[in-house]
Length: 403
Image (cartoon, rainbow, N blue to C red):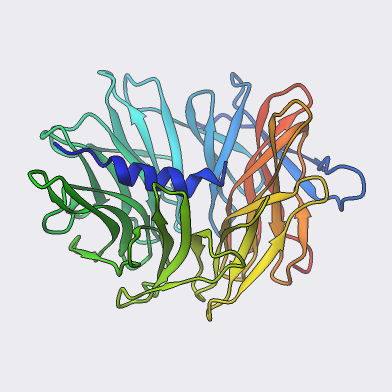
């Protein structure tokens, strides 16, 4: 068996720049954004009664938030009320990963024998055990689209990890690697059921040949290798509802990275940066791309328009580096601004860039750090922030007024 070691390295390279009815209410306040920086309202979503920490990981267009606290999946409604989504019978752990605009939540939960099953919660909070691939011990979801199709990966009876989708009508569908490839890892799925990722697209063990590339799967799970950049291996990170995908081409073990975009036919084109290097990480319905360009000495968040022209989104006065992690269909971008403190500790603040390029430090709850995970169509963002006593709490940042 050949492991997907190189595609694991691709995913690491993409991430390298990023470094049951319990009620409660969050508290609103003003983010500690530092002197000379505009303040923004921040909502502490709180924790479960027996939890000290929490994190928000996704938000839908209705303003419903999902995440985790005290080892359980949780949901916050539009008023900030938290609900423990519970676990499977006999299980001890659950985790919510994503929510779609119909209120369906995808996550993972342990069984009584310690297996990690794919689970879904409906709008009423009822849990469905979707299980694993046949013979598998775990399935890890990464996304759910508005049709209820879940994208993820898990092991099976053959002992190998497989990319797969799940939907209520048909159950699991394995996303096969291209002919001659040994394995693949998924990254994103759009509302039409088209998924993208990457992996070994051609292997020859006897000749010690491995070719790594970006892959797109159609709604039926059939794979297609996306266009390659000469002399480089590629991985796709996101795909919009029009089938346009973005990702990164790598050379030299990941030392050289070039942001790229594939059109609906799979043809590849490089996205321009001042120094020719960067990562494309997200694309919206209009074809606007967010990511990072790698300059010297600092990395900076970037946004590319439909024509491939780049805008340097900048950083904060005391945080010279930045990177984007997502954007909505209006072009509002979320990400992190980062720096090394005097003790050589890596510190990050969540930031938001409005469509006109204005940057806002989203601040913290009195502690040194915050991170942003998702943004909805209205511009409301969620993530986590540290309190003054060093605890991480799920937080919500309302959309900018007039933004």
